[in-house]
Length: 506
Image (cartoon, rainbow, N blue to C red):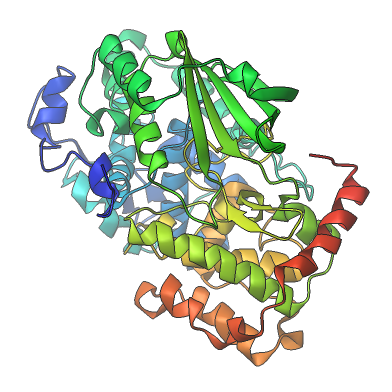
C-alpha cells in the first residue's frame, strides 16, 4: 500500500466511530452526563473560588499573586495543562505514536474536563457553585481573579541548568494529590469516578481490534523471519525496560552502526498498535528523519532496526560550542525539511528541540523522537510531558488555534538554543515556564542586538504569538536567512569538540 495521502487518516477512526456516546458506552458508563461547576471571584475577599485546594497551593508556590492578578487566564491555563500532563505522564512504551489533529482535539476535550474531574474526586472544599457546564471553562480565565493568602507553601527548590527529570518535576503535585486523596471518605467511589480517565486511551480509537494470531500473521508477512544475529553484531546495550531492550549493533552487510529495539511481544498488550506503526514507518522515509530500516520476527521477539547517527544530539553542540549564523541556518533548513514533510502527511511532531535533532559525523541533520526511534539512545534525561514545556508554543497551553504551527514555534526556540546555549525559562520550574509562555508570548533574546537583520526576522516569523501571523515550514524554507547556509560538514568540528568535552562515543 502506497501512502501518498495524508497519513493522519491512517490513524484516525473518527469517521468510522463516534467519539462521544460510543466511547462512553464502550467503558460501561452512564450516558448524557453533564458535570457542572463554577469558578468565580469572591467580591468580598477578592479570592478566586472554585479551584481545588491542591491547585491553589501549587499555583501560589510558583506564580506570584501579582502575576496571577495580571494574567489570570495564563495562570489557570497553565495549571490546567500541567495537571493534565501529570495525569498523562509518559509511561514506558514500545513506540511514541504520531500526533495528529484528531489526537489534539481529544486532548483538548480532556483538558476541558480536568476541573470537573477534580470535583468528582473530592478535591474542592465544597463551596463550589453548580451553575455552568464543562464547555464554559474556557470563559473562566477572562475573569480577573485575586488570589488570597495561600496555605504554607512548599519551599521552591533552586533550579539547576540541567532539566529535572519528569519524576522530579511531579514531586510537588504528587504530594499534594496524595495529601488530598488521603482525606477522602469513600475511596471506592473515587476510583470508580476516576476510572474513565485511566481506561479511555487515545490508542483505542486508532485501530480496530485484532487477535494476537492475526497480528503475528501480518508481522510474518512484512518482517524478515531469519536470524537477525547472523546480520547484526551487538556492540553494547543502551537501555532496557518493560518495552524491551535497546542496543547498538553493527550491520555486517555494510559495516554501518544501527540502533535496534528487541521487543518481547508476549509482554505487549496492544500488539496491533505495533503492527500499525511498522506498516506506517515502512512507507515513511525522508532524508531528514531518523528512518526505520528493517524488522525481524523471531518467535515472539520483534527486532526493529533504526538508523543511528554517531554525532549525537544537537544539544551537545549548542551547550558546549558557539555556532555561527550560517551553521544555525543550515540546521534550521534541514529541520524545516523534516517538519515540512511531516506536516504534508498530517503529522505534528510536537517536540522539536535540540535533544530530538541528531547529527551524523558528516554533519547530517535528522529529526528523531517519533515512532520506534523515540528514546532509541536510552537517554531519558529530559522526558516529555505531552511535549516539553520550555519549547511549547502559547497555543499548546491556551488550546487556541492549536495545530501544525506549534512545530514552527519550537523551531524558533531551538534557534534561540543555538544562539544562547539554552532555551528561555530553562531555569524555571515547568509550571512557571508554562505560565510565562502563556502570559508573555514571544520570549526575549539576550543577544538580540548582535544578530543579523535576517536572523531577527526569521525568529519573528517563527515566534509570532498569533498563529495566523506565524510562518509555515514551506514559507520559512524560502526565507532569506536560509540563503546563506554553511556546508553541513562545518558542523563536524563542533561535534568532535563537544564529544571530547563530554567524553562521549557512539
